[in-house]
Structure formats: C-alpha cells, structure tokens
Amino acid sequence: MFHHAYLSLPGRHAAALCVVLLFAGNSLSAAENDALTARTPVDFCLQHQVLDPANAQKTVAQLRQLCESSGEAAGEASGPPSVGQSANSSGTDAAAVVVAVASTSEPPHVPKNEELKGFFRPYKDNYVIFGRMQMDDASVPFSGNDLDTKFELGLTFSLFEGRKNFEFLAPLHIGYSQKSWWNITEESAPFTEHNYNPEIYWQFDQPRRPLMGQLPFVDVIGLEHQSNGQAGLLSRSWDRVYAQKQMQLLPQLSVGIKIWDILGRDTTNDNIRNYLGNGQLSIMFEPNDRTNLRWRIMRGSEVKTFSYTFDIYYRRPNVNGAFFIQYHDGYGEALATYNQKSQSLRGGFYFPLDIFD
Image 1 (tube, one colour):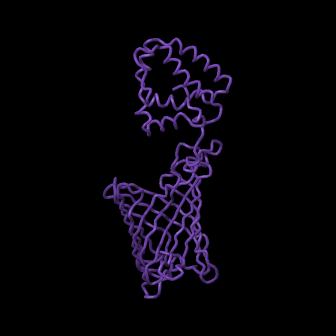
Image 2 (cartoon, rainbow, N blue to C red):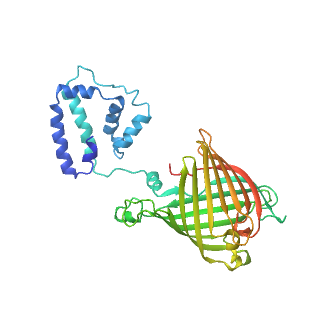
C-alpha cells in the first residue's frame, strides 16, 4: 500500500523514507511477522518481480496483473516463509520492496495502446456485409446487378479527454464515418460509391462538469457534412446541424430521435429534403443478451411512403463481433441514388473495432 504514496516524492525525500523503512523493518513484531507469512502467492510473486531490474520501467499495478495472469504466482518456488523464519528477515524483505519502488524517479509508464484507447472509440456502425441492391424502377444499380459488398467504418475521439487544463472541453468530439460499396463481381472489382461523413458534436451527458450541464431533451448537438466525393453532375453533398436524444422505455426497448436542419446542399441534390426529410426515428429492441434488432425510419416531404432500414445483430460466444443482416427499403441508402427508391438485402459480420485493446 506504500508504493502509491512514494512514487511521486522527490528522490532525496523518497530515499530518506526508505532508510526509515529499512530500520523499521528490523523491528517488526512477531505479530507482524505472522501477518507477512499469510501473504498470498501473488504477493511473493509481486515482491520477486519488483526486485527484478528488468522490470524497472513497469508499474506495480502492471506487475501485479502479470503475477495474477501467469502461473508464476501459483508455482512460486520460494513460497511463503516458514514459521521458523525471523521477523527481522521478513520485515527487511517487505522494506526492500518499498525501497525498489520508491527509488524509481521516472513517472509510471503508460502503454501507448492505453493512451490511444482514451481518445479513439468505435462510432455509429462498423460492419462488412454482402448482398445486392435492386432499384424500384428496374434500372441497373450503381453497385451492379450481381453480388456487391458494402462496409461501414466509424471512429470518434475527443481532443481534450483527460487533459487537466481543458477538462471542460472533454464533451467536444470529432467523429468520422464512411460507407462504401464495392462491386466485387466485375473484372476490375471497382468501388462504385463512397459516402464520407465527418462531424463535430457536443455531448450533454456530464452534469458535474462546468459549462457542460445536462439538457433534459437533448443528448447530442452536432454539425455534420456528408458527400460522395464526386465532382460535376455526379456530386452529392449536404451540411446539417442536428440534435438527438436516446430514451430507454423498457429494459429491452429504447427509442432514438434525430432531427436536423439543412444548412447547405449541392445544386445536384437541392431537393434532398423532399426524399430524406428532417429527421429519423430509431427503435432498438434486445430480446436477449445475444440479439439486437433495430429499425431506422424516415420520410421525405414529397414522398408517400416511409423509408426504413432493418438491422439484426446476433452475437455468438467466443467471437469478438456479431453476425449481421441488413435490409433497406426506400430512399437514401446512398447519396448517389437519394431520389431513387431501392431495396437491398445483405448479410455479413459486425465488429466492435476495439483495435486499441
């Protein structure tokens, strides 16, 4: 319990404390020796690892985790000291552990992957699915008449998460997501469409932080851009400001609402509001701990039918992800055909993108 207190002390003060502890170790009582003999194998493994010079750059927490996860603790050759050992010897060993930890003047080493994990997180959806699209007017889909591949990737990060002087800006996030369609049946296997979606948003879910608060009817307010990266007549893009709210109605049922206002749009899709409207309703249902169902519904101002996407996630044990099926019917699956009604059915794999674990 001492090492956490001494790691941050200046070297000369830490050394002085260690000298005191060395002398104190020699005067441990018999009762204290009995307590030391009750230490677990993990404790002895930890003592051994701390005294090993090869572990000088590791923290005690990391060494303890190593002992707990390896067989070294269980098979420690030295074992606990026998009853016949003196309190002086055990006390000196305990003090030596403190000396080894306290003499480290460098700050604890934080693995790079842990630093990255504090910033980057999966965002929106991440999947790879295979299937085909069919246009309502019987025209050839941009992804081809045969099997195609669709995938979506998304990451979000905060520039100020964990930064002491800018902690009040921690709810400010930058997100990026992308949908792509890949025609794998053609000879050159071209990518036929990309929808790029960068955004910046503020999360109103941290009421204990200054300047953040918690709005009763809003979880997120953001500004996003979406485009297909094309030029000329093939270009599609729009800019929106949005607000969204997630509500848990039942333990297994939740509803999400996202509303937006269009700030700007390309001249090639200036009537996009007529087909995609000003909002989206999401319904999420989880019948069991392995299955998730999601409906996303929207309707434009000039169309008579709703557009919807239905997703099924099914997780299996020992698989870091889920089997995924997606069905779409309506407008807006891709920006290229925002004003053309289509149906598509695809299946594949949904993955959590925990790449920094």
